Amino acid sequence: MASLPISTGSRLKRLPAEHAKVPGRGILHAAACGALCALSAHAPTSKAQQPDLLLPERAFAFSVRATDPGTVEARFAIADGYYLYRDKLRFSVDPDALAVLPTLPPGKMKHDEFFGNVETYRGRVVVKLPLAQSAPGNSVTVKAESQGCADIGVCYPPQAQKVTLTLPAVGAPPGAPVEASPARKSWFN
Image (cartoon, rainbow, N blue to C red; front, side):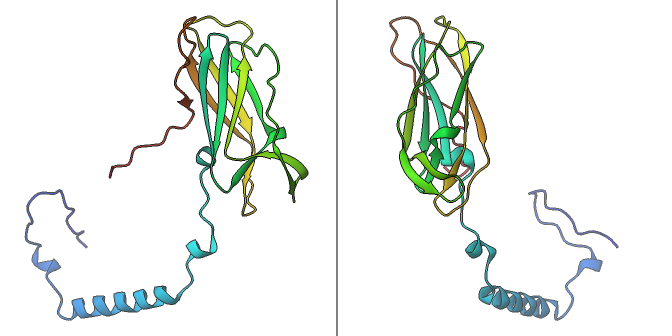
């Protein structure tokens, strides 16, 4: 049995006689499509049964910026309807090290059905990370480990995100935030 030709974008060519239109075929095709469309209109869709959840890197967007040669700011932009657990947040820096453990801002108390009473973050979280031995112009990689949930009761597994950036010169203004997972450009924009 010969296969149908594949479109290459070139001009339309006539099909061989064996692929000629079969009488009544268009009517049968239209009837079958109409029946399938009618059935699918009344059937529940899986999309209605499953909520639209963001990917973890979108729900908990991580970025870092260097404020000076000895300090970087780790930031989370948390999407509406999502929250991060304060006690699940950890940071590390490579090849440098943290001068001291970072001071996390206080969170808001929440009763969580999985973990009991916990502190959580919503919206935006900024944490200053002082570096132990930094030098202007050096590159450092900041790694964040976190875990969060959606308000609809779905929790994500622990996530690790990292950002590599160059430390600014002494006296230079703070650098722009570098995103761990920058938004991809759409073909249609």
